[in-house]
Length: 287
Image (cartoon, rainbow, N blue to C red):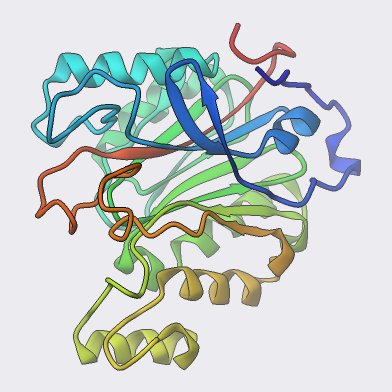
């Protein structure tokens, strides 16, 4: 397992350009950026569905607790993931996602429990600027986005089409920049597996709204919308460097349930994979 090196003067350093690669950590398979973790002590990840305890149709690493899976299996699955990355179960903020634009923020580990409790009122993003506090959000077609600053504040965001229209990823990036006093061009942004335009068909009215908001390039035809293109458009207009946006390039519907859960592909009954992030304060991951 890659060591997690804490960089005390990271504000003076550039983040490595983002790169997502598949890795196995204990029984969990995730897309992650090992170079970011090695240089800055920030672990980001997008989980796959294998390596857990849940039975079909939630098999097997279902991390969502709202999908009628056995709660014991969900808890075991979360424990597997948290142990694999040295996260304490009581120091991971998992909000109730409501397809909105509210974000929870934690600046001190001592506040983690309170922030986690308030996040149950509804939040679709979590911003963390302290060591050893993680954030995890769950997905099955919506777009997972992780934003990382060279000063090690990060945000994990759930962006459904409503969230994309509300520019939740840009809002998260702005708040990270304000918190760390950095420019958007310094940020790394990671876009995880999600439904692609080939399967995201919408009504003409909604397609027009996307085109009016982000430009016609986000449409592949009159009814198909690229959510990742809309996100890129919004983020780059904010000042994020296009070279610092890493996209997993995986359509959850096209995947057919092999690696990732898909609400549409499964007919609405499935588990949830996750996007998560944590920054290390003890010098090593997995302790």
